[in-house]
Amino acid sequence: MPERYRPQVIEHLVRPRHVGEVQNPSGRGESGDAACGDVARFSVRIEDNVTADVRYKAYGCPACIAAGSALAELVSERPLLEAARVSKEDVQEALGGPLPLGKEHALTLVLDALHKAFEDHLNREGGEALVEGYGGNLETHRRGAPTGVVAAMSGGVDSAVTALLLKEAGYDVAAVTFRLHDGERGSRSCCSPDTVLFARDTAHRMGLAHFTLDLKELFDRRVMRDFVGSYGEGKTPNPCVACNAHVKFHAAAFLADRLGFEKVATGHYAKVAEGPALARPVDESKDQTYVLWPIPKPLLGRTVFPLGDYRKTEVRRIAEEKGLAVAYTPESQDICFIPDGDYRGFIRKKVEAEPGEVVDREGTVLGRHGGVVDFTVGQRRGIGVSAPTPLYVTEVRPQSNQVVVGRKQDLEVREVRVRGLNWFLDPGEAGFVQVRYNSAPVACEVEEGEASGEWVARLDEPVLGVAPGQSAVFYTADEQRVVGGGVVGRREA
View 1 (tube, rainbow, N blue to C red):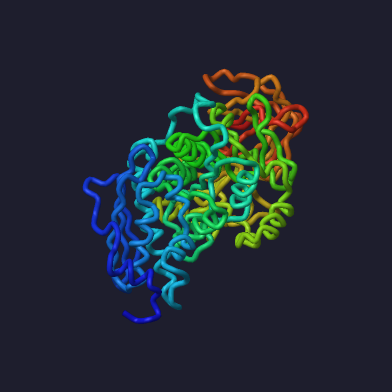
View 2: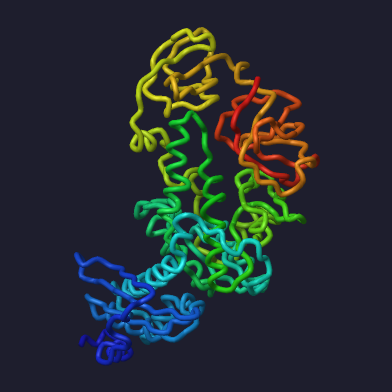
């Protein structure tokens, strides 16, 4: 054996620990590439949140084989939280120090395989709950450890500082990264393989346990399909709202329940007020309460938003002062599964668009279009019709395959009908409504509509470009707390 390997490496090669495979494992994981020669596989049996049995197989260079043996020994018969906290540095120390130059990848490889086994275990435990959506135990606020919190970690600065602030506040923090879609390797997407590894490394450098959950099927069902289908129905959806409604917070609650923790946390800029109710953050320019309205009220009662008391500049400063590698990461994309921003191109890959007519409000045909999925209410560019004055899309009619255009003033509405509401406070407290993420709230009066489950917001002043499918979020008279929110169904001029 070459002298460049330390004695501890030689020891693990000569007397490997926990080699083999667990019979009837609760989770399996593999990482590496047979094409380049290095592959690591882990199988685990987890009982009562303890790694009762851990086995590994590794193929390739001696460093990979030794690292697998050392990691298996470190995590065997350990509480799951402790095992998930074991880092590359811990494995390196068990091997006597840094591996030879060019062999450091072995640490990442074996750790990734182990965490994929943990991920497999958790997803098996979750079963349909992580495919259809988790709804268990949300009514019980105080059945877990009050200082335990599962913090969603995307690989960005906001989620990293969130976890750090929670740890410094005395919480027992477990970080979780969600696999929501097949992000490309090397991309900025929150779900790319590189980002998962980066988030794990960031958590471990803070001394935190890290988990991953595969939510790709749930995300596809409840977010991506809805996003594509909504455009085909002439609606303008917000995928971040759908993700918050059905995916991220519920999955974090699932993991918290499995670990015996009470709280969940994210890096959103918001606060939880008495009620519980959503409240605006200190940094109004980063306010994300608009996309958080669907969180079930019992789950909101379990939620912590540490960044609600900080400005973004302060968050980056904290990351820099603490030496976090995420301090200068760029802002995340608006739509995580469309990193290039071409949502029309994305939708057209999923649906078959049919050409139709562009008409004015009187029904006069002004031109042709390539498919209603290319249009949304309020759109001005790309209509394909020339006119003496600017034209805007005022309505999309998928049934007749028509796109209706008109003047800017034709976009004005004074009444918005909202369905699927989630109330935090009494509807009577609503004094303002916000109908787009970056728009200002407008004073309104709210009352129940004639249709079941429908509410009507009558606006004190006209609003432009309100589209079906958008969120309508109601705020208190002082504009500081979220009363509730829902989805725009119809709008009236």
